[in-house]
Length: 309
Length: 291
Image (cartoon, rainbow over all chains, first blue to last red):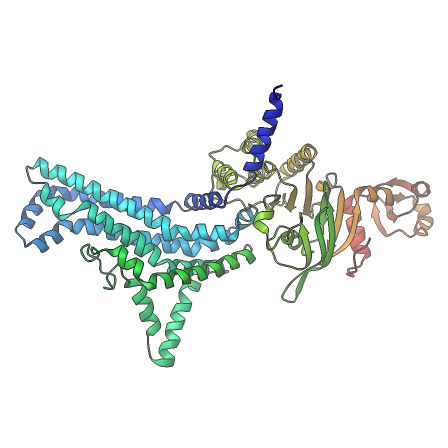
């Protein structure tokens, strides 16, 4: 005898109820990240706007491209490459700058804004832990924003290369020189390590600190984020006449293995030699990630006990 | 098993005592009204129940410690604070997506059906909605969650009469469909009293009165006394006396209804009248919980 179909559907709906009664931790994290992007559309709009503005300017400059290529070909190889790749470097720098700006403002507001507008009462009425929420918020400046910036940068440079090639071909000039001096895939690899590795993961302690200040402050989170480091530096200067703390911060955040310890200057060749290897071997990375973890744990603890302000 | 079990629940903020040793039990299927003046500790008590604040003493909600286990607890408990807590930047469709994404017991179709009866469109942003509509949206989200316990903190604060009435009507019809357990804190007593099965009066961090509505109806009577029988009525030790329509209105506890009928018109007091009587009879003195 066969089982009546209504029993089957009943069993099926029960088992469905059993499985849907659990949402996985990964799913809750993913939705938490998604809601951050909904709320903070500048995460993708700001890089896109900068890219669009830059491209408008670049398209206008294309009129002069055949002439400047001709002029550059007379230079020595190193200067020639520097001249030809200059707009591509500029595009990358502008996108990195806007991305850092967005990341800093995002982090300072992330755990403060939800308390100020009382929406924390809604978020906390959902079965999402404080740990998941803080992790989702930390992933924005550390991973999401760098990846978005990387994608926009590479796409922008690709559009630049294509349009330049078209202009050069139309005026009967060689396209090969352009692609030789602006090696697209090599540059993309460098961007990946610089934007995601350096501005995201290497700078993670900075964003961890900003999130901690954001979770702590009852008002003026930006002051809470900036005053303690400044105070430490000032006290050190007054007490010992030294600047180790400030130099240490400068060294860590502006030096580091990916920029070759050069203090923030970034030409693309400088980053060229196996940045991921040096990056992953540097103990500074792991110390930084450990410090980030401590900052975020404190932020989790603060979010648990803090209500709306 | 009691859904909520509190013993000696205390919460202090510095020198301020918000909750001064509360014992509370809420059983499955009850609708408890937590009623008290501003600053009585209602919000603190509810915050402790839904894991938003730490506390001293013992508290179990559905067998869990809400402070250490909030995220897990919120699969079975839904919480609505006063109106303006939905994120203003969000679209209605995003709220539905998000709750469906993180909440295992959310029935999206049910929420959409509820919203279809309102003028709220899925593409609207929360910031564009009126206060009443935001509450409707929140209610739609909350009602579509198959939770065992619903906690409401002044859910209709700042709403006009129409929305307040709709709110409690929706709540009530849903209650009879699902048989939920509800704790609602409010000082708009009149609107909730027909919904409640139990009432607790809270004053300055303490429970000063706790009865089921059946007990209230059986034990408490309010009499509009004929002026010439006032002395006889007072001899029966009313717990409160007020003026109403030119007559003395006396509130009695545990006095036989037939005996009172001889003195004037007898009715069951409203929760609001009872609240005023109980709190003023304490003369501001904070005493232990009555049983």
